[in-house]
Image (tube, rainbow, N blue to C red; front, side, top):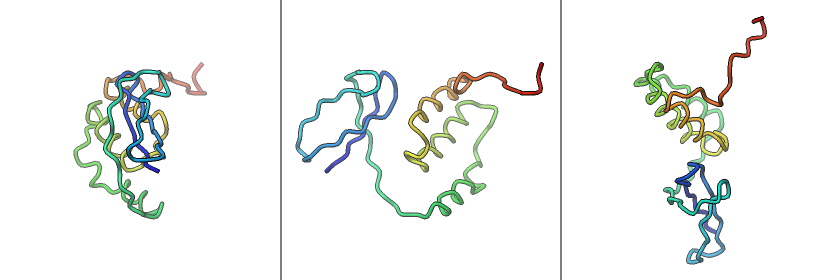
Length: 118
């Protein structure tokens, strides 16, 4: 049973559609916002690695070489690379979070929650 992934142009979230047959026609609707403007994503292929190996690869210093932590676009590129590596483990709202970082917004809209401040 083929799985197809799409990115919604309106809310930028990923939608996964399951079909019973390759030639089956599917009603393309974003399950998050109801939009019908979706772009098909390139499918991933499976590469079996242990969890430890995957985390070791993420922690490799070479993956940080061109990251400028003061540049939101640079951080967003790095986050997308890490998100690609993590796949679904990155979380449902990962793409939205990266878009916020890229725009220079406060990710998640949170404020300072320092317990010691009065």
